[in-house]
Structures are given as C-alpha cells and as structure tokens.
Amino acid sequence: MSDAETDVGNETSNKDPPSLTELNDTQQETLAAIAEAPTASQREIAEQLGVSAPTVSARVNDIEGFDWADRAAFVDQIFDDESMRSPEKPSISDEPASNTSDETAAGHHDEALAERVATLEDAVEQAVVYAEEVEA
Image (cartoon, rainbow, N blue to C red; front, side, top):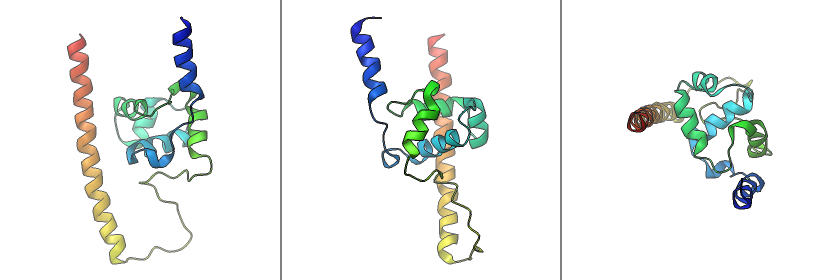
C-alpha cells in the first residue's frame, strides 16, 4: 500500500463522525439498531428493521467514516451524549398514553412516512439488483 493510500485511510479513521442531525431518519434508525446489537450481522439488523441486507448496507455506506468492522466504536461516538432511540421508536414511559388528536395526526404521518420509506427501499433494492446484473 502506498503512503497516499495509508494517508487516505488514516484521514477517514481520524475524522469525527457526523452528528445525528447530519443523518437522515433511516440512517439514524439503522445506527440505533446497530447500537442495540453491535455484534449483529447486516442481515440480522435488516430483519430487525424489516428491510433487506442491501438496504442496511446502503444506509451505512452513505455515512461518512462508517466502517462495518468498527461499527460498535462508531455508534458509541455517534450516540455519545445523544439519545439512543431511533426516530420510529420513542422511549417507553410509565405514564399512560393519552389519545389526543395530535397523536392521531402523528400516527397518520408515521404511516405515510413508512410508506415512503418502503417505496425508497424498494427502489434501492432494484438499483442494487440492476447494478449486480450490469456487472455480471
């Protein structure tokens, strides 16, 4: 490996990870799942999230500085001093839930968002399959 390649590799590994606010909701959700099960495989994370392994791969590969081999350390840095909860999984409270119109509206918004995410995941999976076919 040349010095230039070594420098590039070190530059990436020494750089601070992005903050949660710099990541989209699906990236945050995926990192939260990894934080909960840092030794899990991409396939296991995918099953937990209800997506495909290529979707998990695409989500994390788009995060600057993420390396699957160092995922535990990466998520520790990301979630240091920040909430470990994913956007789709609010914290569980001992207080009883109220049934307000705001919560109902939020539920409808979550359903619409879930449909949009599913559509995007399908598009990503199709793109991965297409790319694999082109390479073959």
